[in-house]
Length: 164
Image 1 (cartoon, rainbow, N blue to C red):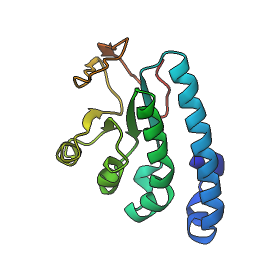
Image 2: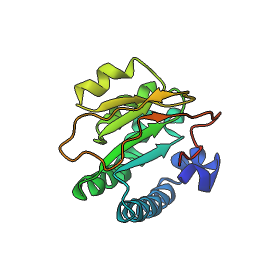
Image 3: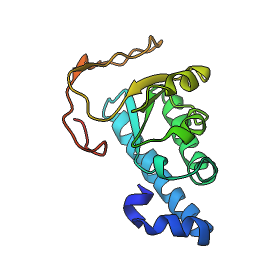
Image 4: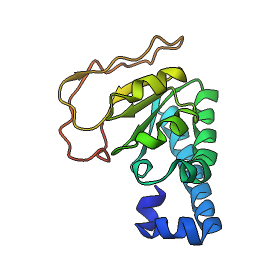
């Protein structure tokens, strides 16, 4: 969300105006928690957090500017007995381990090699990107979601496209 609000200037401000970006991230966290709350109140069982910027930052930047704000979001979702999923765009190779440390229930990336890292943290790995007729299966959790999507067809050029 911060990237969408700031545009590419965010990359410069992460270096030059650190506190300003941390204030923005706090705002984004508040919006995400409130949005997750509204989705959960509406009966949604799996809350997906989409982050198109992860592939564009270093692990150090991730740990400084993302982890402190997204970990409480995933904790909030778990406290409400719902599942979370972390979707990222692009080649997020260098940030897979920092993302796993944020403790989502599942992690969706477009890279097969991520399976070993995600397994190390006990995180279910899904696929993201352009999918066509993929069976979506969730791990066996105590509280199964009310509605499980068996087949989902996505024909999108962007992982920012909402799926309804």
